[in-house]
Length: 404
Image (cartoon, rainbow, N blue to C red):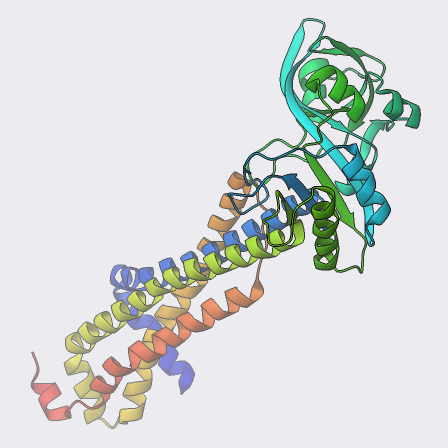
């Protein structure tokens, strides 16, 4: 009996194929939009988290000045720069630190033969590779003697390598940075673009003392990175960093720090929560179109009841039960909604895949949201199809037969 009712519902839908298609279009758009938005949002969240973790897990970034912006790239007001003695103090006194790395950076043009490339030059030591979790694709790190003497050696990023050397092996070659001739001893593994749109491979690393003497002309340390050991609370380490630096920089009790510390893990958690919230909001906005699609189904089913009033009267007159008429129209609405849900799922997955490829974000399939969208579309069909079906079942057979 149920199968016969389904067949009748299918036949009624196929008799008005164009109208049926336009009816389920709202469901198609709603389901497709929900799945596409949530899938793209999940991919964006994963991409942001991955890129921030490339900067170093459990990483504290210390900068002089008072931060004016929130985030890993926040600007700061002017303040006395750090120096190597601050770095050594943190290395000796800071509990729970896996590595402490100084950093001084500037912009310079790298020249090799007839090629030149404007890039970021960073003065570091070998702790930089630990705190940034950065491996070498080729070559070696700095030797202790090179760091102490500030020798003119460098490790280059993949972008610099491509721009200056192309496919050639640069190890042992010499490039010019301002007035310094620098021997290439290593190549960093590629990390690609960050979530902030910067090319992480466009950099040259040289010993900090070489940078200070021959590039910057001072002994300043612009940033200090602290990698926190696994299992150690980064908040406690941050408190100790602030205590040590306040003492060294003679910041009196009650005065505001003339430096600031950023916990990258907290930034990751904040940005992840933000992107998750935005994904939920986008999904909720897209879900509104499902309600619009349900109202469309109800309107079309009401029109169908009006058009088929005489047919309904004949069925009731020859013995059809009200429940059977109710079921027929209810199933017809549910079939339209389910077909719309299936097409919407395929459309949403296609849009999400295309967007993931275009935006270079991972395609993360969430079976839960697919199941929820499909079941919600079925529920929409049942709920909004019930009122027209109930109206059809309650028609008086005599009045229905008189209807023209």
